[in-house]
Image (cartoon, rainbow, N blue to C red; front, top):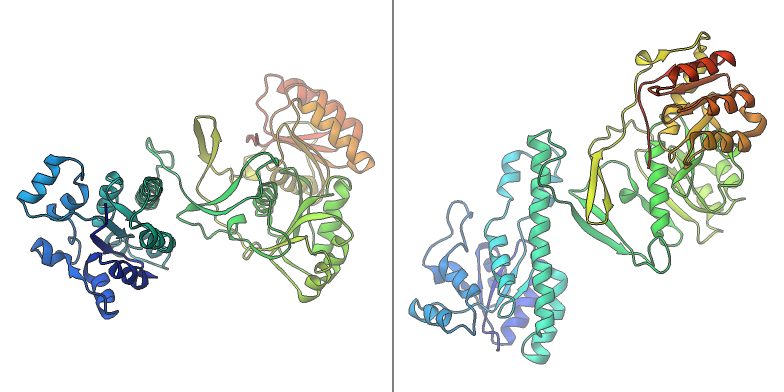
Length: 516
């Protein structure tokens, strides 16, 4: 059935005059509201005001424009339902065959600095979502257009075929329902954050917008895409990183880069974090980035091949020269000097990500989601670190001030390594890392095996308690002088006795850091 009438009411006016002209050239009558009507009229497009049809003016400062039976009956009437058509005739209501509508800029409004709640509330659209949902519900008879990107394809179909196919209408309706669902989700998430402390509500929704399709997912046979959460966050994160060189990031690159960025946020001094397969294989802080890189790399010289490296300072020539000797997938930094960029330019595929404010202390809040088949898990972000004043020394030997300092660094490291995990630290750099094991003793064995003689006189941190003394015995044999762990095992006494027997200082932090 040929479309005769279109209702156009858009907040985003981009491209609307050309689209409306195209519809008008097809002899489609156009109805419009306030600001949209003004724009179209100034463009020389013949329109009718919605208020002329309903007999009511826009009222309540524009809160009520299209909320009227004449409008919604014209949209919702089923064209093949005689009773519906008879009702329209009885009340002299014309059908509306095309709806073009996008919503008040709520998302844009909440990005404004110091925006007031009154302005936020006024940018919650009421009439728009109602129109869109009505048109999408009656998708067989009404073409619903909610995105400026849809204008060209819709117009071409009308020009070529006089109407849209059922498949095209279904796709537009699905996009419309997704549009209003996302809009409501952004509103509810924003207001919940503003008005409550309830981070795990009974009813929850996740609003996302696709950034891009990936070449593939975790493996080549899997489709993948990258989405950003809404409302957007301003915190330094992989979403906000700017790629300034190299190939497109892969699915796995994004996962690894996220791990690197979240880990490096723990540290305020110049720091280097090396990530391989979503877990650190070297972490170091120093007075300068070159030393931080050398110390991190020395932890494990094999694993960084094909890895991700992150720095919380601008990367200069001396570090770039060192890094250029290795095959790396991604380098993340606060910035890159001109000289470092010249060095990296020789490696066209190497991805360089610039991320502002990595050198700042970040107030990290919010929740994280993980998917399981059929559902999601949600929890607070794991950003808490127990204060040294809450630690408990449980052995006869007391840790030195230097060892306590190393413990503070080690705890920040171990919380980012896949469980079961242990790290061995000297001063402010790792010398051995063992993670992702089903037994803590295996994690300890791997770390000491890789660290070899570097483990001597180091400090050890464990992400969870020692269920047996065996990992302590392995650490002692490698030369560890101090250990920090959460405590809480039924065999704590046995583990403490092992530490005392090896003349090792042990501290209970009271906080576990599982990372599954």
